[in-house]
Length: 152
Image 1 (cartoon, one colour):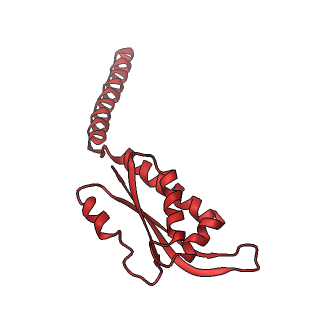
Image 2 (cartoon, one colour):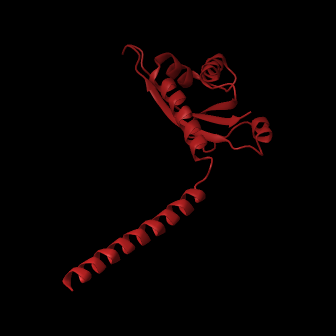
Image 3 (cartoon, one colour):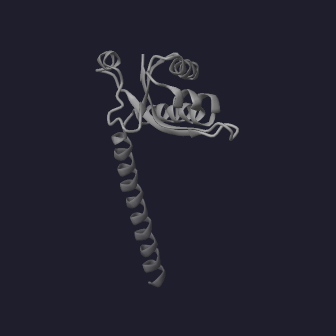
């Protein structure tokens, strides 16, 4: 009699375990279907932007180019643009903007905005505040560098 009750207890534990596994499987399946399919792509673009901006902020010449940019068409800006173009894959297009810190809106140009109105545009920015160089001629002219990236 005791052995029969013991077997029924184990059978109930086994049934409960199988039920929990079935419910867990259904919940995991439903949750995985709700995840956005673009999450991997978004992370890729975000990491790519962070890498490019990190390279600019760690390179003394590129930092000086950001700090010395007066308008978004001078030679310092063009060298930044060339650097970004070399770093991005051919399947992406981009726009960069250098603004003073006190400028509230550091948005992309109107022509780029109109061209990308129906695309997903990823924007990331860094603040470049100074470049100490070799210590004899430090530059302090904080700027905001914003990088906009979208698929062609």
